[in-house]
Length: 141
Image 1: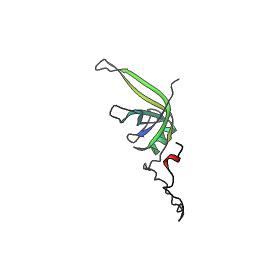
Image 2: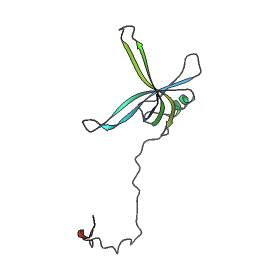
Image 3: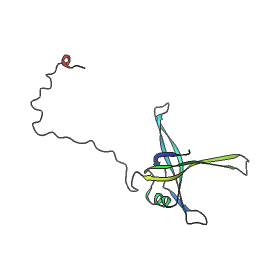
Image 4: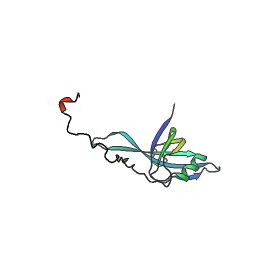
């Protein structure tokens, strides 16, 4: 089975074109997907993955995705091989053919860090509690 599921951020705006001789839209974009482990320096590396989506989903991706937006991609991995006529070497290009693209942020949204919820206790709450009355020997753990 050839199935791939990715979540990442677009590295640039998507590029939509129509396939020659057809009215089928083809949109290409690249997403940066963070690896789930740290390198020797203690930082996370990212993989930059090419994605192609066809048809109506391609038009939606071109209209609503922008550089920096997070998206989820479901599809299959495809490796194209060809022989370079000049050098005679075999070359390859790996990409994901997307069957589904889910927009995790709107095109004009900016990522934000949610604020900590603020809790303000009622006035006088806890005034009768003696904070220093518990002896460490009384605590069972």
